[in-house]
Length: 313
Image 1: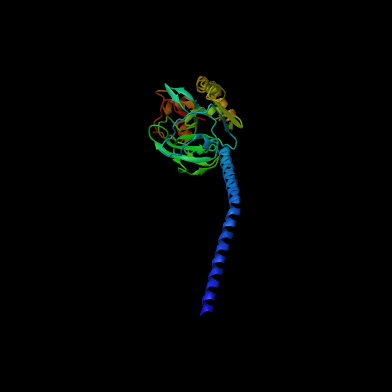
Image 2: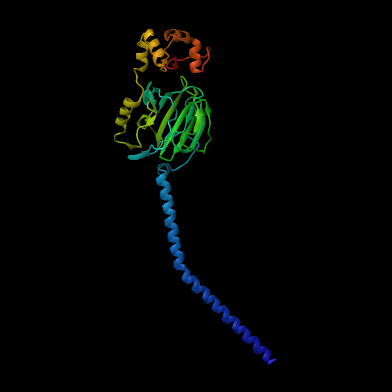
């Protein structure tokens, strides 16, 4: 009996000693591991900061916009004093070269984009890669329109389209079709209303896009608040609509116009005046009502309005 009790005490003592040794060993291991964990945590934090920095460098829009919302077309926030906009990897929104209305004051109010002549059904494309923020219809304004936020900090708006081809929150690449040309909303004829905005503030697209030459104005555009107004006026002068374009065409003789059309095959346009009809325009431009309807994708019964642009050759 004495022997059994002594054996039990020996086993209990051994077990207690072993458990104490394991616990101490484990604590030593944790102690040795702690500096390594702190180093790994520091490395992970640094790596995360580098990733965020690279993402923000590649996507300046992350620095400019605090929120993402599908509720509003644009909301002006504070503009930076200067901001470099990357214009590389672009696509012209339309192949049309005809500007029908400049950025700036028009009819007593501010026209915050440029109007480019397109026809119903023409393909409209994303100017840069980015993410679609708004896809909507506005009866008294943009009609069918799309707003895209781009990685270079810009937001572009495409208005008066006949059809949407994208959805909100969809990622698009430069050149991807986003809609079709149209005459919806507050519009006097089929055209694309194109806006470029920075922090929700409308900038003159002519500062960045040269529709007549189907190109951008450079690899980058440096926005500066103190010189912007003058830069915008110069851009309109260099790349905007020539206000005498239609007047000079109207003052030309019918024989001259017929000669130009036959010899060069140039595309010509007529700006509708008050009181004009398809019949009077056809007679003035030495063509037919049928040809006008065919070129402009309209019917004989369709009402034309002053200021509307019609192709006649």
